Amino acid sequence: MTTATSLSHRLSLFSDRHFKYLMVAPAIFILLLIGVFPLVYSFVVSFQNLTMSDANTSFQGLLNYRQLFKDTRLWWALAHTALITAIALPLELVFGFLLAQLFLERMPGRQVYVALLVLPTILSPIVAGATWRLMFDVRFGPVGQIVGFLAGSPVNLLWTVNPNLVYPAILICEVWQWTPFMFLLLLAALSNVDASQLEAAELDGASYGRVLRQIIIPAIKPVIAIAVLIRGLDLFRVFDIIWALTQGGPGTMTETISLYTYVIGFVQFDTSYTAAVAFLVVLLLTVVVTWVLRRMELVR
Amino acid sequence: MSFAATPRQRRIRLTLRYAVAAIVTVLFLFPVYWLFAISFKTPDEIFAVPPVWVPGELRLDNYLALFKEGDAATIWNSLVIAGTSSALAMALGTFCAYSLARFNTGGENLAMWIISQRMMPPIVIVFPVFLAFVYAGMVDTFHGLILLYTAFNLPYVIWMMRGYIADIPLELEESALVDGCTRWQTFWKVVFPMARSGLMATAVFTFVFAWNDFIFALILTRTEVITFPVQLTHYMGGQSQFWSKISAMSVLGTLPVFIAVTLLQRYLVRGISLGAVKG
Image (cartoon, rainbow over all chains, first blue to last red; front, top):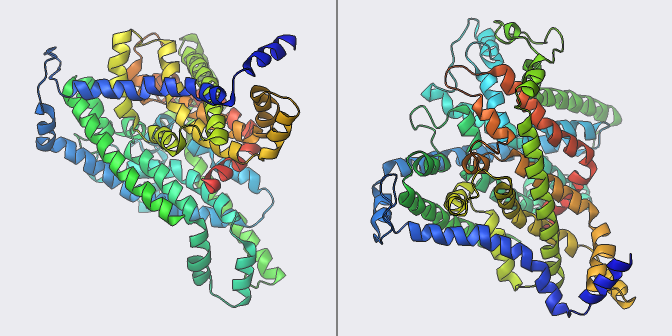
């Protein structure tokens, strides 16, 4: 006790100004160390020509950046990423909303249901991918068995290899894992919608559709915006689930931008080019996020 | 919200909702159950066609194999790394958040910059960090990974705790200061207890994130420091998938997170809703 008070006595000699800077200093230091310094270093590297075979660190100009435009695999990776995001995000939003509506009104035991439904979201995405790989297995996976049962005869579905099935497989796994996240957010948001407004509308005889459009949705718009931003960013950088399910295959059909960056950086060791790609991704994201954030400020 | 329903109609709706809720829950949890079931099956049961829906008995063979072969050590690695980095991130992040919330240190620019750090895709960060780690000899070390997870979780902690702290009435701190407490004492005696549910919720998510991370661990470790998700992928060979190991390891690896989430459940729903609704 005495040591604590004497320490804090000494600390109290600092004015407020020192205190507030002292409080942020350790965090900022670490962020600069890991967040900024490596990015700057990587930026410098992107102007060199470091590859698996060449350790020459001389300045090479825009060599790597020019290659960005010619690299079709890169743009396909971005397209794959956009596809997954564009499909998964609305699905998660809609299903999450429906689930939230289901559990909105009081019902005994609701706590238990909610606690159970959260389970997919807290799994490691690798575990989620592994789980669905088991589910989709062509010989002993339940999915194949159930589909075969419904179809009347055994089917041979290679979910993780068949080009027509890989994207559904990935999307099923992804939506399965993250719908509960949307569900939780929307449940909280819907619970906070002003009950008196809803009652007033009900007394006025408004249909459910109108109430939904004109009262509920505007009220939860800020939460939807945040949810879309968070999930959208997470979907953009999806890696683990795809790694566990298809590893980007067949070929490069399900290669997202994160996977592609991994391949050129840590398999081909095209160091400088990877740095250029990383810079491009950062640029893209900054533009998109700034635009989205500005629109969000307007929404509020 | 009932839209003019009679008591009988309400009862029917409730029963219907229960039915749908049960079906939905079963649908969502079936894959998890399947994983769980496989971890207890014998190889014959695993590869049986048609599949064995319920294992014959609860055999712990698969789990014992994990411990015997030392694979379970990766769970310990994950615990140490995720635990330490979460504690660090929570401590440093909350200090920082307090300063931002009460003194508006650095203004909007600093806050914006910190939030933007969270939006970086891991792959973009991991690549230059990898180069830096190679240079500093920190690849495949405990402290390297801990430092990284701390840094990666800091923006999230700062963002969330800033919101929670801002919600605490200023008067409490002001009266403590008037009573002669230093700023530091005020922080520990007033702010810290009041922000407890926010702290719990944030701590759980921070831990879960560090625990479940794969990409950083994959790239920044080799053989010495293997975490649980990376170990899991070692079983996923091209031809032979060690299904029993995958499932047992998955269950083992999910257990700590599941326990943490269940214990701190009541903080979580409040935590998420406060964080999201206030923004």
